[in-house]
Every structure is written in C-alpha cells, then in structure tokens.
Image (cartoon, rainbow, N blue to C red; front, side):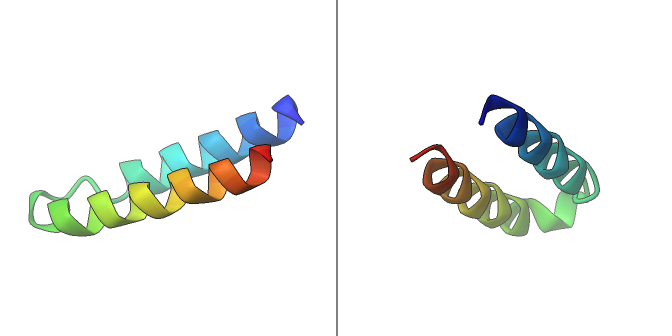
Length: 44
C-alpha cells in the first residue's frame, strides 16, 4: 500500500513540476487539490 502511494506521489510531483508556469498558478492549485483527494481515497 505504501509503495502504491509513493509511486502515485511521484507521479503527482512530476505533473506539478510540468505546471510551473506563473500564469498557471490557479490551475496548479486545482490539480494539487484533486490529487490530494485521490490520495485520501487510495489510503482508505
């Protein structure tokens, strides 16, 4: 289970890195919020 979370977390991190555009601040926040919700679902 921890392995799955770790892999997923790295995927999220890579995704966030690709959104490092200053104009995309709002979009990045939305993506992070969605990913946090997904992680919560996975850990249950």
